[in-house]
Structures are given as C-alpha cells and as structure tokens.
Image (tube, rainbow, N blue to C red):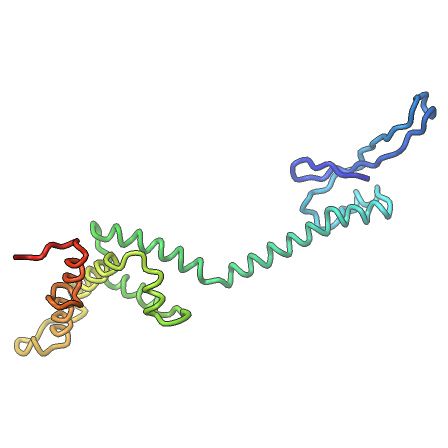
Length: 208
C-alpha cells in the first residue's frame, strides 16, 4: 500500500503485481487500486475504511497517518495550555494598547479614575527582579511615559483627588512639597534635573 497526499487528505492505494503474460502483457507491471481516503488529521481509522484494509495495511495507516496526527494534536494541546497560563503575551498586548491610548490622550484626555484603575492593575503583576529594573529595561520612551504621568496627575487634581488647598500654610502640605520636588526635577538647575540632562544632550539650549 502507498499514499498520495491531496490537500488535507491521504489517498490510499493498494498495489498488485500483474505477471508477464497473465493478461496478454509482454512484461510484468504494478497495478494500483484505489482503496479509500483518510484526513491527515484523523487520530483513528474510520470504521468503514478499516473494514477494507488488511491487518498489515491497518498498521501501515496507523503508523503513517494516525500516530503523527495524534502527536500533532497533543503538541497543539500543550501549546494551547501553555499560552493560557502565560501572562507575558497578555501584558505585551495590553502595553501596545496603552501606548496607543497615550498617543491619543493629548487630544482626548482619559478620566483620572480610569488611569488609577490601570495603575492598580499593573500593581498586581508579579515581576521577576525589581520593578525599577523591569521598567528601565522594557520602557520604550521614558519621556513619553513622564508626559503621560504628568497629564494623569493634572486630571487627578482637576477631579478633586487632592481636595482644596488650605487657606493658610499651603507650603507645608504634602501636595505642595511634591509639586516643588517635581518642578525641581524637571526645571531645576541641578545636574540631576531633566532640563539639565536635555541641555547636556543638546536637545535644549541654555539661556544666556
């Protein structure tokens, strides 16, 4: 028996030897007879086809078609189970969508509560190594991330997350102190500020 592959099916042929002179022929030759077909993905031989096969032919079809089909099915099942357990591709897809949202948020700012829910969801991730290392390694554009964070903070303030400033002693509040630190980190004249770093890199010109 031998097999011919046609699309997703295996066509089975049985060969018989026609002896010289048995049918007026001057020499012997092999004659092929079509027996049936079976899907290449079949894990077992269908009953109707099996009834047409000899014991040796059944073993042949099992070895050539059914065994490989079962192995492929098992591998696909293992891959599907591994993908179901894997959080990595979900994070990659989520990061792609968040980057797209960040690009569009300048024209249409996102509600602060939604940003907060996103931050809470990210906080629930269990990462290998330190969070700082993970962010530093995987971040594509830290300036863009900083801009997004500033916009989110502005929305949070506007939404009343920090309430109203007191009539007196506003400079002693945590909110004002954080703002002062943020201003210094961005526009400060110290070497560690973003402004100084951009000036050193030539992106921003020094005044005077």
